[in-house]
Image (cartoon, rainbow, N blue to C red):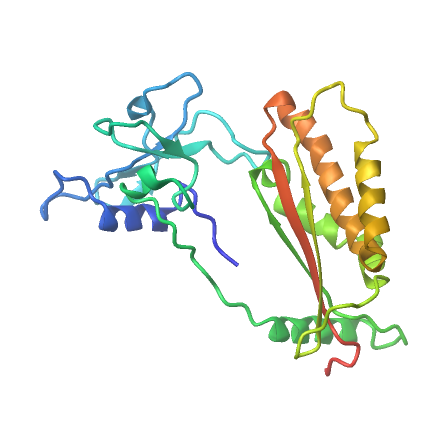
Length: 271
């Protein structure tokens, strides 16, 4: 699990200042990164003229200007970039401060190293199990705790609020479909992991048949009946995203790739 590496991240800005400061920075001045950390402007090809994301106030404290020009997603987050300095031979820009393969930008501070966090899944299950047990103390209903994880590209996240994704993949109909799936993979601590990768581009032509999603679903479920439930959930999620993308961005919608994962313990998970 990794954090967001947006140009609006103050932590990332400080990292850029420390790793690749401007050559004219000195001990007596507040350092600035070599990279331009800016809000994008649609019609501005010279990125050095775009507004800066960060500045320092009268107390020399780093603050965000919030001077964006347009939103990049439905969560109303400003479109932002890191761009090479104007002295660079090749003019590159990127919407993230960490990436793989952008070697030219790496020389100015973009990093290929992820920021990794460890999450104790068993402790999370323990809390969910306790909450479920308390909610159902007067009934004989037994709920198995389950965690949903979605890994996705911008073509997905541009179109959803965080709560919308949670509500979708944890909807009762989705959970019922997943829990009916035959458990085929178990690890040593008794966790059942079901995953399905769903890939499909959003920028399809208007002449493409409307039943593409149905054909894709039938093909996947026929080849792997053991994962029919998770196939249906992941394909439904992507199909809903395609609908949102066409409404929000039309032909400018970004390509989308998503991985939907559910993790649940054995039924004998202790309280």
